Image (cartoon, rainbow, N blue to C red; front, side, top):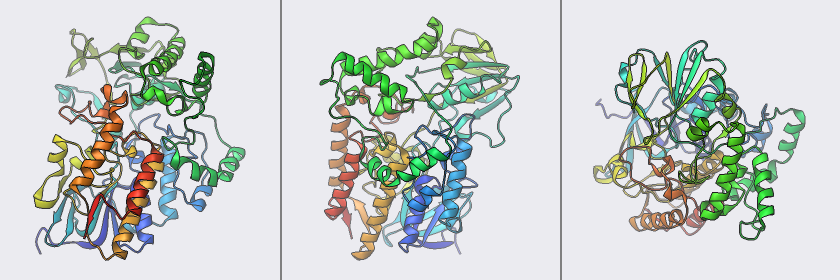
Length: 543
């Protein structure tokens, strides 16, 4: 026996026990494929296993963050409109047990390498637990936000207190009561942490980097009446969300665009969308906010005004927290929902420091805390880093993935991030992917909508392979080029590509600049995927 002697031989390896991986395993097993799911953590959950930070919760309504199995759907009830992490994790355990998936999952087994053998047309997948698995197909369900950015600051190891990442938050929690706590980052995650822990900290220092437009979440508790209402609407919801722009229940009203409404009608639409207390303000107000500066500026100004009102026109907080039109437009960044965040910033034990690059950025960590560019040292006991992810590509590029001729996926993506529909990569036969760049699931989608669609497409492709007597499926160079051009043409028509954000990979030094997510719409993407399959996979080479 050698180090490469297989410990197991299967038809398919699935990486990641989050929403996509669990659903992929369930589908492949139903179709008779011998499948092994590999998970780095000790249990299922994916994002909702690793992100246990205070305040973590959905920003998709619970009744649409679902897998579309009627018995599964109607067998679960959510306690509120936007459930929190503990309840979400329980739901994923429910899914796992309902589908009896545990027997085919290997936990504490982080995938370290996946190499394609051209002679045998099979993959060898290795894990941190010593597994060596021989498989025909390697399916990545590693998630679009699962590769945290770490060690971002100078002398980070010199701080003598406790440092935690929101993306790797200790299951036992972090004691903040009476402590001097610093939170770095005011994106969606930082906002959830800040609004949750602020009242308990002895003193909280918020280090604000990029200001964010925020929308106030409305999160009522749910009881039997609400449960019956959304259970009864199963068929309607199931058929609605896959064809909307964003995979949510709501969508643009084609009769109420920016150009065919009066100023008074526009104001009413903005008010109605904002008061919905959801992402409707972003994803169903006016489509023109993604394309036209006039609409973008007006909606941005409306949201900023709502924020200023709640900040009681505090000039310092507004300067640090509220974006201006010179920064970027509403919706070209990820839009966070918040519930008490702006009020938390005004508590007497909270200080907000703008650490933008052009202001007073963080210079380095020191033993007692954080030193700013102006020489001030902020003394702290605990530092919570809400500093983001290497989104979309990070889950795979941090693994030694090698395709034909030993080519390295990490090396290729370090130069140019390309895929075919976010479902595969030329040069890597039988590697099928979800939640990677150039598909809506990389950022602009209710994740269960897009991940369900992608895993269902992968399953049907493997069934078609078997039916047609094929053993290899790989994106062609021409197919990949065609999709990348369509993706870029669509993206470059929007304002999103004019903004520096993690959507563009701008938060990772040296990462190639390209919009990570397909912005043509979830319904449009789904249609294109179906057309690809029905036409016999013309963007792929099958053998």
